[in-house]
Length: 166
Image 1 (tube, rainbow, N blue to C red):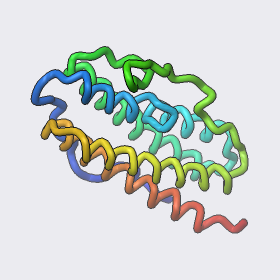
Image 2: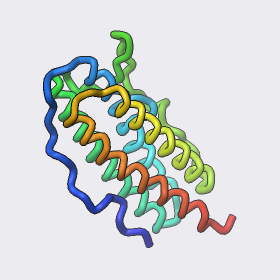
Image 3: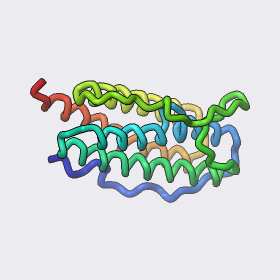
Image 4: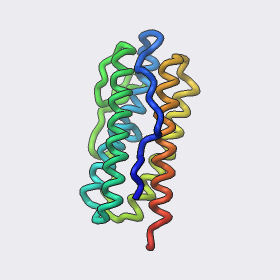
């Protein structure tokens, strides 16, 4: 059984160099978009309800808890940047509020793991993109640490899929 769904390394202290709506808007996508942490938390939570394999359900629950911690970190960072951590993404001064249509409601285990692999790959791309455009050193350190967990989650899902006898 996979027991560790979190990289064994502390997260940096949550702080920012200065308030910035622009940086908060970038983080809002990572926080509460269809590809953000809120979606990951609820996606993996849903999956724990519908998967009959107790070991995989347990692993999904543990990953969901880590993603919930990422959500909290991003929310606190958005607040320090001077914005309210509302469950929406802001792009071009337009708000897109989170909704449950962002969740894949599949119940087939193989499909669930394939979706999770693709979603973790996308999360990694999104965090890397944010790193390339954000100039706040503290926010970048936070993103780098979260990225380490996302790589671990991708690895876990790939191992789980590889272990299926389907």
